[in-house]
Length: 472
Image 1 (cartoon, rainbow, N blue to C red):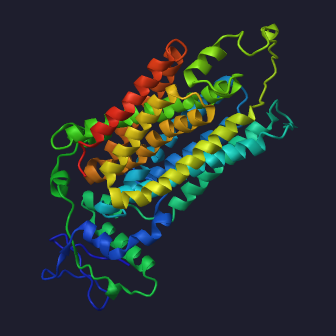
Image 2: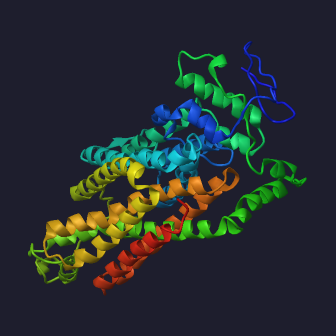
Image 3: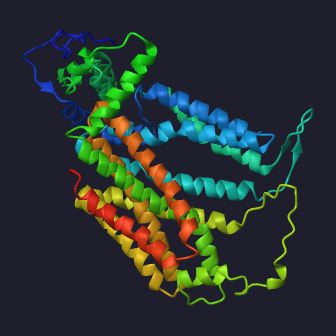
């Protein structure tokens, strides 16, 4: 169905299903239209797709490129090829992973965005469980398959790369049948396409409804739309790209966005430092905690003890003989730890999506981060290995689940024209935080375990305070 654009940028549907202008009808804002559509019932359908400028098309291309590089990495013939392909996988997957929250949020009214994004983040926990269980199963086999005419030998780890690529391909093909974000269209002055998608959403969510039942007659243009439409454009393609990047970035560093944007970036950095930076060392630390002969020992004492080759181990096995052949055996404990963390993330995301209605975004994220910091401090003084592991998991998971809440806040706080950029840049700071945190643990944990946990726990508490400054 097609609709026509009136000179006043509003749209009307009459009884004959022919859109015409009707100046006397009420004009609806986007949030009011979403409230009438009742789109929450299809949150599972819309929930796992991503957004960037250009939204749907860019996501499809990036996912396809991710899948292609992942498949090629599975048949790598040398280390250099593997590194290059996995690097490209990281480059291309950053588009959907960074902006999925903006796309999702634009199908819900502002009041529900953070809750819905947190609910959809259950997929993060489920993906951790999926990768760990699949990896455990596939790598438990020991087989080889020579490819005729090549020196390539297929092994379980190569098959695992192919299996891990399937969700990416499914997501890309699924996006092909989904619509673009109507709010994105409104922000670009494309009310025609926005109205069509909103009408389609209404009809899909109300199977027995007709076009006549859609009560919306007018949609208000996105704030600032005319200014962006009238802005001068460069004549060269390179200039257009540079101008577009500039126009989407500079507003984040101007009032009224700059304070909120800086806080989001700092908090994301801190959250990733704790959840990803320290989380990278989680299996090693737990292994060393459980490897010590003394069950009643604090985590720092266990790390110090296991760092000493003479503690609890046979010092006669100091000489290691390294086989030149590739050893693809993996300790099963790694999978158990990953499944445990993934399960905890899944449960907490579900709980938080419910608690957010009662406590609100600020209170919930503040509690998460204060509890994370508290756990990081207290676990140093506990000498029971099980309690220590529980506190360690709380330290990581409560910080990690706060990332999705902050992403929801970012989507709600910033206007549509800079929303994807805000989410991308803040998550970029988060990834830098994960690199910084993991390297910091490697540098100072052995020399000063207590200082390490104090620093990381303090980071969670500081982030908790900063989130209280953000708008509700």
